[in-house]
Figure (cartoon, rainbow, N blue to C red):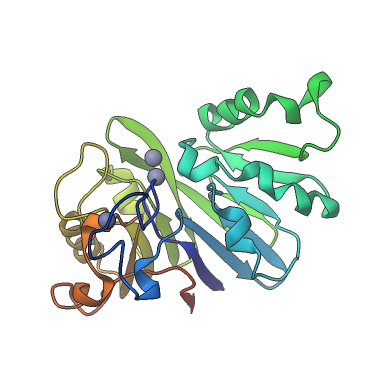
Length: 252
Ligand SMILES: [Zn+2]
Ligand SMILES: [Zn+2]
Ligand SMILES: [Zn+2]
């Protein structure tokens, strides 16, 4: 299974508009972060997890092939704001969007012009599918397990696919999800910055959870400019935990 991080930035992206800090002005391409999205490919199956407002730019350099599913973690704009831009892929058929009930209901309300009697002729064709934590579902060759994650007070989901898991926008992890992550070898997990935030865990929290899960390799995502330079992160992170960066590919 091939995993490609198409975006690793927090909700504002990095550089932050109007900021002249050392990260936002860095010449290191790893310090330029589009909104968080991952693409997963296995045999003939291809899925995205989340579809933020940078998706058009993120997909311009990828082969134009169908997506079998778009898995949504939650309905915040930085995770769903690019769904309309997938309309070109409707040339292959409707797009199958997976998310929790409240999340897909938000999509139906916000993108009313894609559904029913009010469908605008050139709007994308979206088929919404509800998922529930710990209830596996199949997309092509992939068996996917949604996992409950707490985004501050807000319940959202992460996804486990085989020995890989993707978790973003997490503040805390319920015990049931901790148990469901046993056996995962490669994890992509959010680490916002060093200073605490009400609804996102810090980089230090991410290191703690990765060590407790005992995974062999973890990449951090949903990173803010205030996390500091990519180049400096290896000075304090354990060797099996690294900042992810846009364009990073690996196989699980
Ligand atoms: Zn987010
Ligand atoms: Zn900055
Ligand atoms: Zn969020």
